[in-house]
Length: 130
Image (cartoon, rainbow, N blue to C red; front, side, top):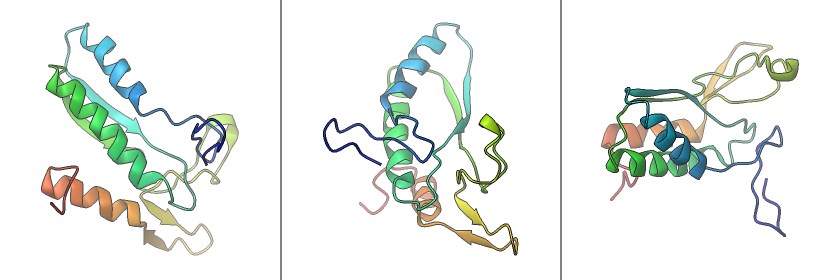
């Protein structure tokens, strides 16, 4: 969701989307002098309208930090599948998954953002088709 007046973007839980934040956190964490693994970076986006852009923007800032010497060894999008969210006991409603889960049938459906992320991973590029 984007606020037309301020340009501020928010996810399905109302949290602000600020991809540059990952860069600032990585720069601060690098001062400890240990390798960094990002194990959870995701977006609740039931309609899958913003997830692809979210991933690309965060990876751009991640790349910037790495190019400036931050020792990032791994990045894992959260989450592969929609899951149970304990935050505020939201349950199965926030949809973080690259793969949608139908909780009535347990059928899985790969979201378009998952295919985008797969191309980024395969090509090792944020511009996979270039």
